[in-house]
Image (cartoon, rainbow, N blue to C red):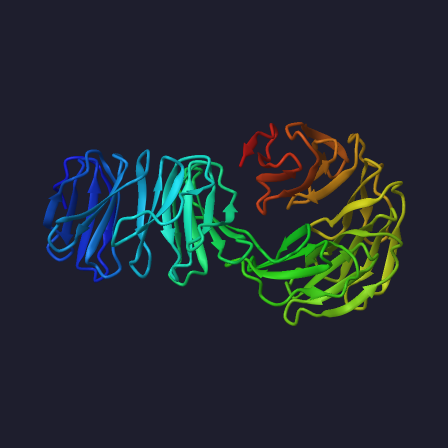
Length: 480
């Protein structure tokens, strides 16, 4: 459909779907037939600068437009005749929308305000809504008409009470201009799009929690799992990739759909203090958890109830738990400085590994199940014979502060460790020699892991970044 002589800035369907209205840089508005794709009315003139936004009234009888000339204009949708011109904004009127009942018009402007108007008289209702520190680029009503949402170049979205004009909430998370914002048809979700390259989906509840982040280029969804009421200490993904388990200082474990990000059941409770660690069994049927109540529990992923435990033996917080590759055993690391091995079916203790002189923060089995690696507050990494419990070789030394995380490469030939000394170290698992030290994080490295194919290494740090590394001899960093 052609006819405008400048960029087309905005379009909207009529409520009956028979027409489209468009606003253009050429200062005009056109109405088009969706059947013939030809202009049926217009160009409608009146604006003296580009038209940034157009919208139909709910009954399809009127059209509202916002322009860089600072005015809002209302036109008869059947004849094209001008009805009202609203003058109050002191800069571009960047976005306009009707309320669901058609009685109000809301506008957002480069003058950093949101304004509400009487749609029949054109009079301003109340005072301008102020709160944004940047241009307002997008406004919309909730389906029930009780709330207004606005998006701004200050990187935020704001939720307003449509009656009182009071700000209800400020949505923070985007790192660039929020150029579009809208409610879902049922009013339960809110979507915001930003120049930071993401679309974010928010749960329209009192606390306005963000639940999804979508990449605008790839469409990939990064799930934000909302439900815990205190710090989340660890997240594990099931072997088939369909479930995620999280544990928290709120003493609970939660099970989520890794596809939707929604909680599957109510929280799993039983621990009497912080839950520090969770891990799935290789068959995905069970979850093991370690807690600051000094115990270990095993849970069914089907019933979400404790099926074994609490397992007693540690005399301090259990910081890390992991299954053996054949699911027959569980290894745990604790504040008490020991590594313990348990029978995963009976809960009976099998071995206690002693040697660390500090708390054991991370433990994991080798892919073949023959070795266990542990990282400790004593700054060392140790390798153990998983059958006898004997130390294999000498402790791996090099870190100058607590070792927070350890992991094996999928082929079992390398070990990676992350430390509070801000570094990552790569070790040869056989001769127990250091291969590389990565010094790019600027704060504690909390977690490290290899990709399933062993070609990448991910690290997460208290410096606020996750870094992806090429697992080759030069360990080139890939940032995300």
